[in-house]
Length: 466
Image (cartoon, rainbow, N blue to C red; front, side, top):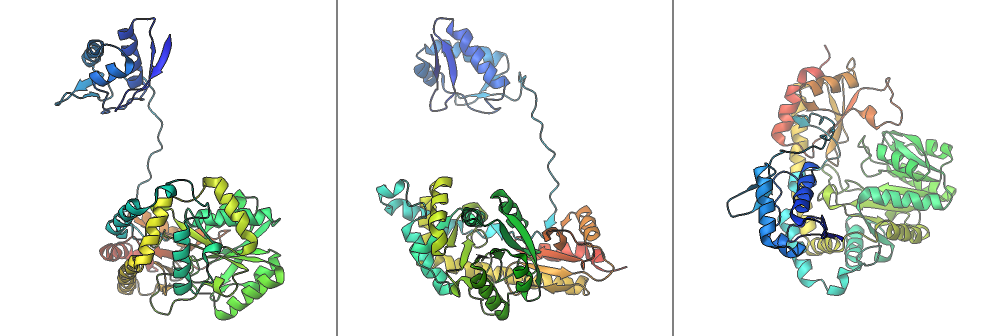
């Protein structure tokens, strides 16, 4: 009779036939598990007493088995009596083929990455502990797929106050970050029969990828110094568009009031939908914050935001303000995808918002980014004064226009040889344009002041025409 058993507290799945010699089987099962890597080097095995109890065999038999494996070099016994898998001795499985890791730049000006060290770990852990102490037991189950009622209420108030959004708990959906929010929106649009969505060019390549994933064609629309070209948008025939009006990604321009009015008029005339990516509006420096476009036309705009830039990407928490005509489809798709965002994390975020700790954290991080922004301006003025910077009014990246005669790709490649990560604007275009002026998108969110100075000094000669 063959049976499978697991041992506790360190569980190992073993197959034992009680009609055959037990010790030989036990040795073979453990030996094979080590050889194949199912039991990894250094992993602790169950105690002889625990394994014997769970398998219903004598402890002496387990002790003898461990002694035999030890003599063969498969296991070792350490101080305190615990038995662990030794090194790689006796492993017969072919080594896994692993791609060689890409060499990480010593200093990387990658855009879109916030200061990962700024995550308020102490405040977050206190918020989680607070929630775990007070959250009613019944809210440990599956909740509303649209999200915690507490968070949606608090968040709607925050967005109305800080972003001038037209927000209410009923129209708010909590999602697992901006990307899921965009997926849910595009899927709802596809269900309504739309086949085309317009995207900014240059813009976020993920928009094009997600559009394709739900069966939509992504049509690029040019961006100029006033933001997206609404006349060009109208010529596409699209009835939906994804925009970053507060701080265009990646050029950094702000959608002008005239273009805002034109975009809203376009949506009305086309019975269209505007998807507003509000990705870094919390971080502004030289001018007053620009209100969300959604506040001007809530029946036409889906507002998407997240904690990825304000707290940390690892939290996977975001939000959507949905027009009524898309709300039911978004809620149902969210239910089918994952039944809702993590409840405890939602409550913790609500606690930070409600107590003002979230905004206090934003003020701290905003000062840090302002210092890094100033350092970037200073470093370029000192080492490459002919490089002009744009898009610095908000966020934590800037666009650097290189002097004539410099090639974007050549500068990026040469910097990589010096372990400095640079990223060209052409990488954000739907189709690379070799005739466009050479520009770099310089992120300073996750780079210290000292590294900014060091990095620019290291590549200073590459930023000057010969």
